[in-house]
Image (cartoon, rainbow, N blue to C red):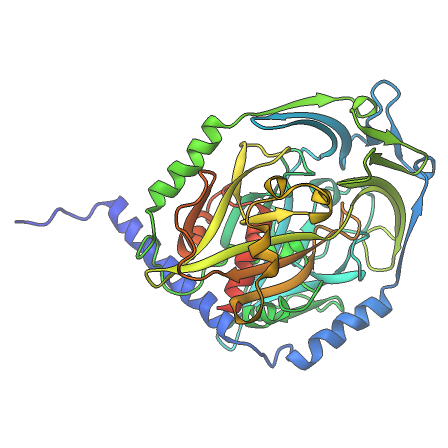
Length: 463
């Protein structure tokens, strides 16, 4: 039989496959480089501490009345900025299949940039990390992407200094785009918020700056083992960087088509009604001079803060922040199925999601919110996530959540291996998916939530 002629589309597809295979090889080589003469491991933590010392900052809680440029709307009580930009804290009325509640939520209808500049040194890709201060960070400065900016910030609404290296991520860019996707932020606290996760490779040497250093993927993965060092915005981009061979469905418990059908079914059959509610009319929440909190003292508080920082585009400002109550727990249960590592994923419905549900870790909660409740009302699989010890724990680190909007928000991130007799038959909103299937879905928008992406980045670091 005469073979079909190669069409332009077929040739292009073949080229795309070859390009991606080569890209994965380059990323994997960077992940294997666990030290680098460009920035040696022995210098990284000292450099981070030096930035914390040099770029001093101060975050002080203040009454709402002392917010500069921010205020409560007289008509509805919503808390917003006088420019109409940045973000607004408003009320949301949420109804799902099993619950109905109201809460404050952050409405920030703009897409930010979370971007890494990458460059080869001696044949190994390095990533330009920034030691960035955020007002909500428990330890001031953490490692962030090269650029981490909202649209309001990078378009100059804050009237501060231009953002360093922004030119690589806005038209016309001067580099080669290696990865580019839109991904969600915390669905429990943001209303339909997304960011552009992007990696751009450059050839030229950018100017030196004291708060930036070149690190390999292997070095960054090593730092994922330290509490509160690699920030959330860096972790979400790291999760999308593919490593190792492209296996896709090989050896998976179910096909990727079945995984997508499972998530689509949950999205199609689950109720998520999101209705605007004036902030001063949300039930069970009370506003005082310096906070908005739940009447039971659970969940989170809205507070106000005054910030001064030496290494930010603006040296001082005030803003609202969300402050969670208690330490979160976020965990994937994992197990091999026929020799292939699988994650127990949860199709989780969250208040602010744009598409009803996203793939979340097995457990994602703040245990303090369930104190005193009977076992049947506790999050499923919480016991396995918390009580497993020893060699079955693949990862166990406390990491900070987004420090620009949340005050000292931290979660204990765990990857826990369960024995092979752990049931494959799980509740309908859970599913076993392979690591390679999760990585495939990360190439596209809106499948895995930000907590799942952090744990994928952590898992890649352990592998």
